[in-house]
Amino acid sequence: MPVQEVSTAEFASAADTDTPQGILAIAEIPNHTLSDLPEQKTLRLVVLDALQDPGNVGTILRTGAALGASAIVSLPGTVDLWNAKVVRSSMGAHFHYPALSCTWEELTTFLSRTGTVLWGSDTEGEPLSVLAVDREQLPARLALAVGNEGGGLSALTRGAAAKLIAVEIEPGVESLNVAVATGIMLYELRR
Image 1: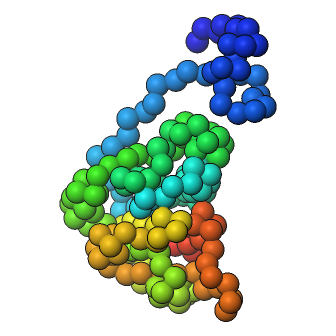
Image 2: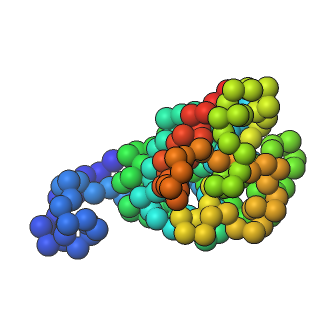
């Protein structure tokens, strides 16, 4: 890979942070699709339903890679998976872990074709602790949808979910950050 030194002004114009690390790279964005996912008995997908905060998306990507989720799937309305802040927040997960975007129709076709069950995360859902105790209730092939930071799951996703699940939290606490809740759920839903 060729290396090119540039002036401080050129470097500053290309970097998008106030205090860059001193190195920039240009790379081709991988074009992952749902059909690229290996056909395995066990599958765990994280479906991002219109998440807007790049820090949350990058953290979920990194957490999914760390906790053995098969891939991150981004639905329309979600911040670009290759947004610079998403890439920084993922701490390099993009370069060894499948993260892909698709339409709602492509996702539902994939779920149906592969026998993958869709669950949604919702504060009114069934407590995750109940499911974690009875591991037999966990589908081998599961897609977990997490919703927008302010609005939760879209009506389309909520309506298609076979089950809504929730992380139990203390009374008086409104909700958890979506990246934190996703990490807890992924940990509990590991097979």
